[in-house]
Length: 161
Image (tube, rainbow, N blue to C red; front, top):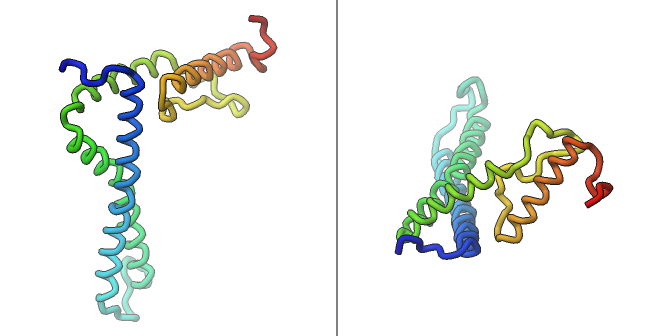
């Protein structure tokens, strides 16, 4: 029971599941505040001769509606993460431990960002696209390739093995 996540592939599946929770929760958390503000501003009486923060009241209400939707969109991943943790509360401590170990691996193995250039951008600096052990190995190869290009210049395909 000390380690509820036996393999790294299981960990990556849980990460994928958590990301789905975060993405799906963006939809209702965006729509609900936007619809709430639309319904509020739709029933509001507007005096055409007054301004609200120096703007036309209709434009101000439209801007507030977009702002409410954007705020809900930004809150969606937080809500999804909380929902994931509530639904999977038995594995949350071991998931947090694996997250910490995984991000330590990322920090230790990522290429130096100072070697970044227009022709040589840093590939997936935070390891967000890693969804399996094979993806992690490919990420490591890309980091080494970025380092070689930054230090030695050019393409590493020309180097002898």
